[in-house]
Length: 301
Image (cartoon, rainbow, N blue to C red):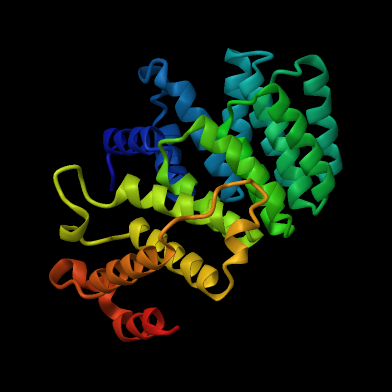
């Protein structure tokens, strides 16, 4: 049987890594509660109770969640964080309308409670009220502009509604706030490709390559593309192929991005990079499973 100290250490690791792992958290947290050692945990006891409450809601043990919430409410009356946690507990057993009413009351008292605002948006999206979710999220981002996750959520809502132009606009805000993240640049590149803005798309795919392909001491011809870099080279190849079929698509850029130069050379480079990626051996050779299919695809006109 796991010791209480081992359970506490694992729970602390979960919190530090922002890992949900609800079943594991509940089992270990229940052991901690059973041994009645909260008073020995100091300030860590409050973050532990919040962690356990969320896990208990996830696994359907609302009785344990209620126990955690009572202790938190006694310690932090009228805490916005505890109020939000109470709302999540309410969502587990009450109708969406009741939870929304509760959140609306909290926002009337404190319009800056970001957690409550996000819960309302989550309910609207989960219940299929996409227009309300977009409206609420747009208002939220007017207040909390620097929330990258909020902009990503808005981009995802638009994308799942096939409104890719609006999705791309949201991703542009993401890139203003987090320009150093190649995954966000890749997402914007793929969305731009879907909208038909090939000039912007290929520019961003090449930015991803520049951000991720090897290190400064390794030249392009010496490096082997891996992971996100391979995906970016696929994007470059798709763009150059489309432009080769109809050069007008490169000049028809809604973002007014200049058309790429030396498209044929870029196409050759993308082909060579994908061949290298799928010709690797040893540990990197796992990526070569679809080698024949990829070689046939890049060789096709």
